[in-house]
Image 1 (cartoon, rainbow, N blue to C red):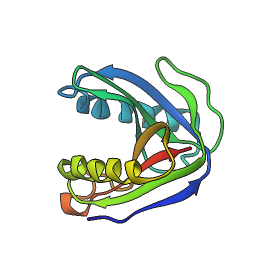
Image 2 (cartoon, rainbow, N blue to C red; image 1 turned 180 degrees about the vertical axis):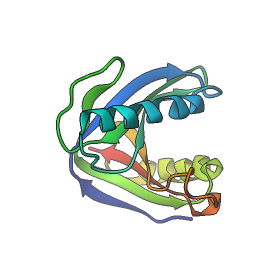
Image 3 (cartoon, rainbow, N blue to C red; image 1 turned 90 degrees about the vertical axis):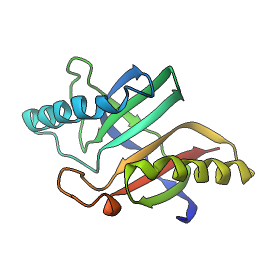
Image 4 (cartoon, rainbow, N blue to C red; image 1 turned 90 degrees about the horizontal axis):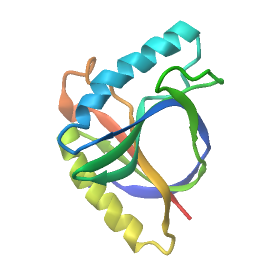
Length: 152
């Protein structure tokens, strides 16, 4: 099992889009919106400042609310559903998971148990950062995903 640690993280500006879906359908949003965001970033000349991410605002079967984001180095104007936002900084639980996306559920269960065992309560949303690109890494066992959960 991956080790979970707590660490202080900085605030990060992002270009993002927030969407409502269901558990069955939400994965299609990644394929729809990441290319649109990459295109807009290229069009505007905004500098990327990290790997793509997904913030989970709500995650129940018939109401999944996610915010797909791209860390950016400078401000950018909104375009359609895409807006500038920020991930707040602070103390966070952190887990680095390596493996296929199908194993993320177990990693999240481990994270929930860890956060539940702390004296601090979760604060705000949690998110995943996708350090590997499945389009260029053909071996799913080598995909790297970081999980963050802000704490009080």
